[in-house]
Length: 151
Image (cartoon, rainbow, N blue to C red; front, side):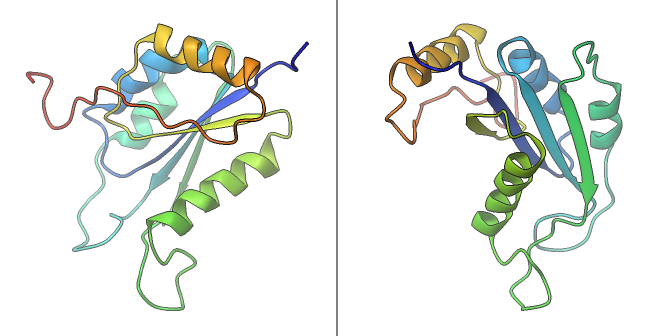
């Protein structure tokens, strides 16, 4: 029998207040942990004020204590002083955080704040992870609600 799948959903966000709660609602019941890196600055480009993203994460109903909100300057720069030189290093830092904090996690799902899932899709993915433990990476096509719920 295959070992149980322990799935952590991970986000890195800046000014994602419009969509993040919808995304969290769509995955909360089908993942074991959720980590949200909330950046205090945009990833690149001009500095702009933060929206209410952090407050949305902290106010999200979490009766099972699944959600961890980590706030920091995750802006990536093209100079040696920044630990984040591009999006990939930032994503890997998030993965390293999950590995260090949650040793029980067997699988990691990187999610953008505007991705809203059907719970059955994540349940099917979990099943595939369980019956195909030799597969190291799954790439999935998702429907994203980007910039508007109208299309």
